[in-house]
Image (cartoon, rainbow, N blue to C red; front, side, top):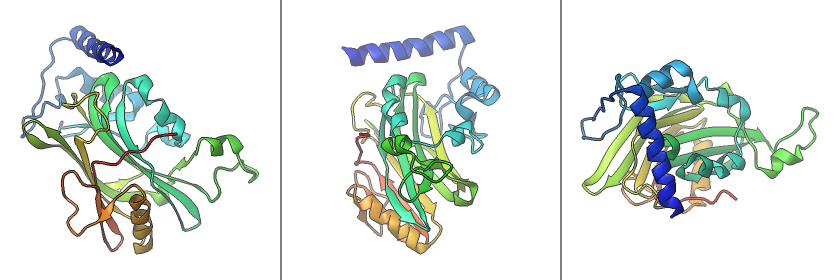
Length: 267
């Protein structure tokens, strides 16, 4: 009953917004996916002109994304943010692979699923770092509160990495590609399309598949990230682009990840 009520409220929110904004022209991509990113869609104007959550629309009008100058960069990331997803009616899978490299602790977290309050289907990869041993105060002493919530800092510019990311979705008619984020240097690569998945409330979000390539700082770092992924059941494969499997491949400093099945409890 609660699930049905949540969805009804979410749909009501969207209907009220668009009713007040006028007629909406919905854009369908070459695969027939209604992604809602159209110049006549009021969300495009809203995101591009208000800096709401640092969202922008892609010039191709095929998806939304969050800019690299996002104000969120100032606040780091920790488990509390993920634990609060339910307050935004979000149904998201996440993985938090962690490892130590070059005198820092690293977390390269991934998300995929339904961002429900404004009905977006999306995916994210974020790069986060902290001192070895955990968060510290300005005098170098341990910050016990931030350590208790497993807090990380958003990556400094020197630690941004080249990435590309594609999100696929299983539907009744087969797998479709939602969007691809271009190869570029990011600390947080994101992509979102208007709409709902065919399995809105059913979890984990195994109907969503993320395919991402990251150019790490070195071959050693790529191997360390691969080992961190293995803790979630990922397997090494020379052909990682496969449905229903969690796989990775390393080519020098580049690691390619195919993520569909695994998920992690926040606490």
